[in-house]
Length: 91
Length: 397
Image (cartoon, rainbow over all chains, first blue to last red; front, side, top):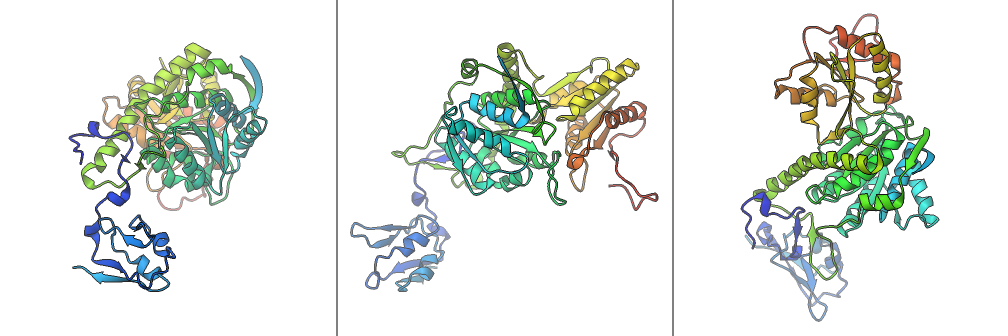
């Protein structure tokens, strides 16, 4: 993590060189999505509907949650046509 | 030099061609349409090697230009009135991303009531978006200023977008002879854009990314600094243009017969042209009047205004828009600047020419005459030519 002592140290444009999926926003979450892969058909609607970059796929093409980035909005759980995703209370 | 008879709108198009803009994304709106029609014609005949992107709205037009700038391309667009208002959100994005875009604006009144005529409300209302704002007086100045604007916005210490304004119909659809400078000379004046950063496929980069409260202020301060540096670059670009092409416009404020004037009117846009004639006429009558043309509204020319104010007894301000709730916008800026200076001339603001109402020599002469006899309290505002009832209803706005 870079440290910035003054405005002079900052880039001219607010550019980040890490993908947003690396931003740790997990602390915003009260409920986390958990996928029951036994019901999943790999339709990827969860991936498509995720308003951020919190859903990835593994080497076999199964959807996985990037828990470091997921803010727990629950949209994926609502949109999953086979209700594979449940929101589990964390706090 | 080649002289071409053209409208103010075509002066924008010719300037975009001379600046070799790489991307144009635009949506048509009266009275801007012929700017981008002419650009489309240049592209279709191969005279412009430009990616011309047709979009579904002004919001998308400006977004496409911001994206083009992110890829290191020189971008141009143009709009008016409602179209500019629809761009409002993206105006902040362009400035915040430090995208050096130049946009032609044909100043048109804002609805309702629906109007297509000259009025500065559309661009003045974008004051705080971080865009440099130029107001032109002639078709020649439109062409010259678009080229100057590219030189300014692409300065590495500025990297802020600029609007180049022209009054609806008075310039946009009125023809005059315009000197078109040779391409080779323009190429030297506005060399190829060097972006300090560009998006690349192989590199992870996010633009306009999320910022916590600990550094947001610093990014805004950098924009503020860019505006400070823009002032210097605007003057340099105008001087350099004068040296190369024989025309310059006084940087941010163009003075006319102000040196020994008792009364100066600060005017903007085409009305300044008429005011110049009125100044000459009144000078012949022995009246010591002068004109200061506000060419750049952002960054606001603090030093220039103070300098003029310190030499005159009375300063009049021409506002072709009104800030509902308090004062004409240029009037408030001038008052704000002068409060912090020793110069305290009598100050009066005039709201005039809204929705294309003609600002005739008689109207301007009336303002000068009023300023010459002005005594007492400063900073009243007058709605020039307002059709009032015989018995006034409540206090003045």
